[in-house]
Length: 66
Image (tube, rainbow, N blue to C red; front, top):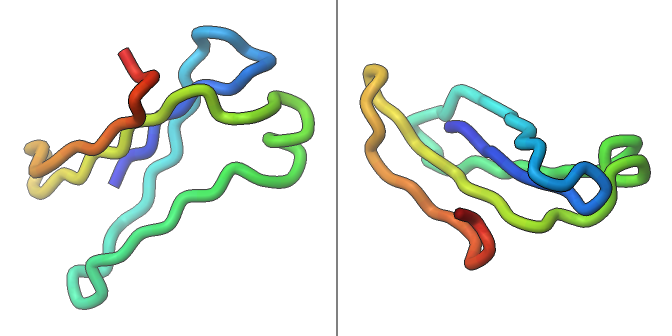
């Protein structure tokens, strides 16, 4: 699973977090906390993509993501 996001203090710069998903639970949670949140501010937009075997399976995105 790949999570891309933009934050208030960084404008259009895109940050990425990636994790492997356990197929038994099928649940992933991404959080932007701590220093990342304090230094760069609130999330302005995000996109989450799930891939399997290198191919995208599904995508969800916020209203403000271009």
